[in-house]
Image (cartoon, rainbow, N blue to C red; front, side, top):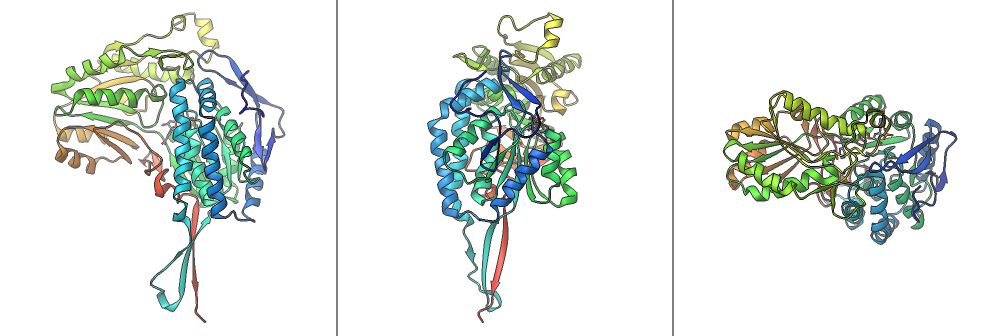
Length: 493
Ligand code: NAP
């Protein structure tokens, strides 16, 4: 069991109190690196979700001033910065990512609260200078209502920061449902919220039966906004459930990012950025490069640049120093990458490089393999001659597979890049600025890295197009997700 000053309570949090809900059922949180049971938590129910919604709804009766919201955001930033190492340790233990990366996730999360605090003046009432019809017009940014926030396991502390920073800024009370695999970072967050004296009901935490909790958030009329980060499959369920209730939805869904390398690019730079981009969270991120589209004349050289950077990397338990790639979150995640690899090889792709997994975890023992859901290490693996019809081109692999597809012309690169229903992130490496501008204008993606593999940042709006969802998190745009604008026209008489 994990011992941490940030995990004093092992339960949900409703109406300002730690609350285990009414059900006696429990679930285990397991370290994906070694199978250690970190905690047992109550499996909360539909009723607990409804109580959370009620607690949140009551907050709307006593609006929280902009100044108080700013104080809360800044106090939270202070706490996160103070506790970054401990937060990082919790993230690594439940998610598996390397410790340095997990601590960086805490910093990244703090950035969203800081940005919201620094830009809260965007939500102050605005007087219209034109005074139409001789009236005094004022536009108020009101909290949109109760917000349902549902997050995935790959960034257990950062994904909630993107949503909660904006809902706190708006004064919209939240009901939060974290992923079942990584609820501990969320409990740590609530410990910090309790420490800063967050008003009761302003943020509430429930975990457990995802579809029951999700359906309460999508159907209860008091919840006006549902903000979800996760798979396109679940996003579609939430969309369907919410539609009859006219809720506002923000959906941050899956991706299938092209990483395009032209012959005129700095190949070393492209390979360097690719490795950093692709191996964050072991390749289990929505923005990581999924398809490596490389101009045929430089494909061999690019592969060498890539492999020379992968060779020194160690795969293993994220708590061990020097580990660059942790375990996959679970067996299903591991098997999906394996399936994409097998499908590609069967279709004619060539496996040209594969790293090593920790000794003892490459077990062929069928009985042992069947019984465990931890220790699923997948090494960085490079494929040549991948084709657009293969699974690794059609679906998000969500693991450290590097399939190289070749193209001959700019038109072909563009067509291959946009050949997917997803539209989250794309990356383009070229030394020709005019080519870059032509390509970027035509890439159907919400985020584009130009000679860079960098992903989202708190200061800029981030979100998808097409089946990657809609809505933006981060930047000033992200601050508008949880407000409703109310216009007041006042007659001079
Ligand atoms: P997931 O299976 O969709 O789960 C995400 C969250 O939804 C979890 O909290 C899950 O709870 C919950 N959930 C599952 N079924 C639900 C239902 N019927 N109603 C309401 N909630 C439900 O996704 P994941 O496997 O955790 O995360 C990986 C996916 O997230 C990938 O596709 C990735 O691309 C995407 N992602 C997108 C972004 C982005 O910014 N666009 C960022 C990160 C990840 P349980 O855990 O309890 O099942």
